[in-house]
Amino acid sequence: MSAPAFTVIQKSALRLWMRLTQPAPSVTDPQARQQSRLLASMLLAGIVVIGFQIILSMVISNKLIGSDVWLAFSTMTFAVVCGRIFLHGGGITRTRH
Image (tube, rainbow, N blue to C red; front, top):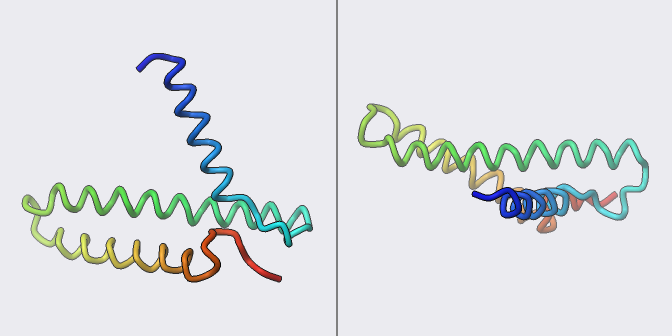
C-alpha cells in the first residue's frame, strides 16, 4: 500500500475513533470528559478485540476441541457489549447527567 493511501486510511480511522469516543455535550467538566473518553475508548477497544476473537474462533473451530465454547462465549459477550451501546442512547459516551 502506498504512503498517501495509508495516510488517508489512518486519518479516516482516527476521525471515526474520535467521533465514537467523543463525550456528550452535557459533560462539561474537563476531568469528567477525559474519564468519559477513556472509558469509551476501553469499551470500543473491547469490541474490536472481541470481534477479532469471534473471527479467530470461527477460523479454528474445526481444528481445536472446545473452540466452539469460546465462539459461543465471544458471541454472547459481543452481543451484550453492543446491546449496552445501542440500548443506552445509541452512543458509547452519550450519558445523561
